Structure formats: C-alpha cells, structure tokens
Image (cartoon, rainbow, N blue to C red; front, side, top):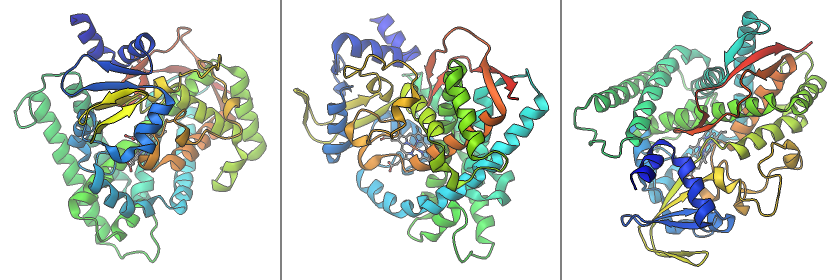
Length: 431
Ligand code: HEM
C-alpha cells in the first residue's frame, strides 16, 4: 500500500498507466471519498467532456490548486461563472488575434535564432529552456504588445514562482492551508501578491493611454469587455499566461525530441519551410502551406500531450460504459493514455506525422484530445497550432537539433508533461 501511495506521488502518470493496462478502460480506485474513476476509452471521454458535459464540473483538487495562482479565470472557473466568462472572453481569440500572435511568433523566433547563431554550430542547448523563453515572449507580446515587455517579464516570473509552489503542494498531500505560514505558503503568497501588483500596474499603464479605435493586442480586447470586473481581469490575464506558454513550450520540446530521432521527418520539415518561405519571415498566409509542420506539432501533442491530466467532478449520478458513478465522483482523464488507446492501430506508439496530414480528428470523437473536448475545449487551440508550426518551420530551415543522449526521454508529469531532467540537444547548422 505504501509503495502504491509513493508511486502515485512520485510518478502519477506511471501509476495511471499501470492501472489502465491492468484494470481496463474505466477503473475505480479504492478510495472512498470522493469515489474516483479513471476513464480512458474514447466513448467514456466523449460522455464526460461532450455528450453529458452539463453533468460535470471543474470543482476538483487539480483546478482548485491551480486557482491559487490563476484565481477564477476561464481555465479554473466552474459551470455558471465559466459560461459567462467564456462569452465575454471569446472576442479576444478573434481570428485577428491569431494573426497577431503569428506576427509576434515570427519576431520572437528570429530573436531565438539570432541567439543560436551566436552560440554557433555544435553548441548544446537546453531545448526546454529555449522553448519556454520564446513562448513566454510570444504570450507576453500577444497579451500586452511590445510596449509592455519589461512589465510582462515581472509578471511572468511571478507566475512561474506561483506555479512552482503549486506543483510542490501537489506533491505533498498533507500541505497545510495557504494561511498557515509555512515557508512554501509564504513563497506562494508572495508570488501571488507580486502577480496582483504587476497586473494592477500593467492595467494602470494601459488605461493611461488613449483607447485605440481597434483593439491591437489581447489586453485591448479584454479591456473592451466592460462587464469584466477588476479581479476577473486579473484572473484572465494570469490564466492566459499560465495556459498559454508552458503548454506550447512543452509541446515544442517534445516535437524537437521526436524530430531528433527521425531525420527524414526533420528534413521534410526543413524542405517544406525552405520551399514556402525561403528568405522572408513566414506569416499568417503561409500557415496553410505548412502542412507537415502542423502534422509534426499535432503528432507531438498526441504522443506527449502537455496537459496530461483533465479532471471533472460529477454533479449528478452517471453511467459510463456500464459503470455507475455516484454524484460527487472525481473523474480522471489522461490524454496521454487516451492517445495510446490503440483501437486496433499497431503503430499507436510510433512517431508518424503522416497520420495527421489529412487533418486532426475532431475532438468530438474522443480519440484525440490534447486540447480537451466539448464546450471547454481550449480557447487558444488555433493560436497554439499556428505558433507551433511556425516556430518549427523557421528554426528547421536553419538548424537541425541532434540528440545528445541515446536513451529515450522519460515523461515527467508536472503541471505540464516534460522530459525528465530537461532535454539537451546539439545545434547543427543546415547548409
Ligand atoms: C499546445 C498548447 C496548448 C495545450 C496542449 C492546451 C491544452 C488545453 C486543455 C487540455 C484544455 C482543457 C482543460 C479541461 O477541459 O479541463 C485547455 C483549456 C484552456 N486553454 Fe489551452 N492549451 C494550449 C494552448 C493554449 C493557449 C495558447 C492559450 C491562451 C493564450 C490557452 C488557454 C486556455 C484556456 C483559457 C482554457 C480554458 C477554456 C475553457 O474552459 O473555456 N491554451 N487547454
């Protein structure tokens, strides 16, 4: 019992995978409160996230921990509060915003490539660090525009610190409430206070400027929504930073890892990018012409979905594939496992971007859910896919990233799924 408890704590993903493989598509854990189920069959996933979504809410331990940092932003908000917010926030994800994210991506990737040029051929980089840094720049610029780069760095650093403490809490089932002045709680509270201050300063700076005739960045869109109160605005901003950078960075890190093991997929990516955008920086209109880059990103998301855990609480009793779930049950869905539900496909564990060249399966099928499914589908999905495909294309034209370690990377389930111990790769200039 002790060793099962230790595995849950030290490697929850390995524990979930073991449970699924041993006990099947719907597993009830021997935990009385709350009754806890792992659902891995796509039909069950569809039931919870889509067909009967009104029967499930987000008042789970996972989201309440996240809410310590994000507050009741769109990601953690539940039922009615969420419905109202989603309607209000949706305009910030207008196709024009995707266009502007693409522009910011181009600028940030050029900065990353200049850094790699300085490091030179043969240098070893920590890929996860590089992807995090670039994704942060993109989310900062997309939210706040270039003029607030300095302030956004403070905000982002405080967000990171807060998340770090949230992960530490998740590893300690006996973590005392946040008002108890333990060192961890003090750090968490300090990070949240810094976040609050940074957001207040950013909002004050923006409000001191004349309102543009047309929203320029996502902050303009959010400010245009007069129904969002001050603390709701703060929560959305922090939510976008949390949800919008480490997810993309982690997917990109895994994409480089997979490309490092598959030279022909990497060469095809470079050739596609070269053919479409040889000398100029690619933009929004180039995206439909980069199908392989999208397929590589989508396939990395299949094998290593950054959001490896989705949880729900059942609001009423339900039945999933013959199993009765009482009201108040905790439902655990792991996209990492769902994507390995083979449905008779022997190549399910292989890296094969070709499987997505004709497009990705609709989230409604329940088989491919890196962005979730149903009404709570990720609001940033198109932004993330554009950002991922563009970064991979631009970087692959000039560089190949070679593994420095022949051993397979082991996924480590933190807030996002990351390679355990980071990912170091060697930069090889393409000639
Ligand atoms: C590869 C990148 C990304 C991945 C893998 C990802 C994954 C996810 C997943 C799995 C969910 C659903 C969670 C659930 O149902 O409980 C979600 C929701 C969400 N994501 Fe993303 N995401 C990504 C990028 C982004 C970006 C770029 C943004 C914003 C700038 C964003 C903002 C959100 C928000 C606000 C929600 C909550 C939506 C709602 O409940 O209405 N995400 N994301």
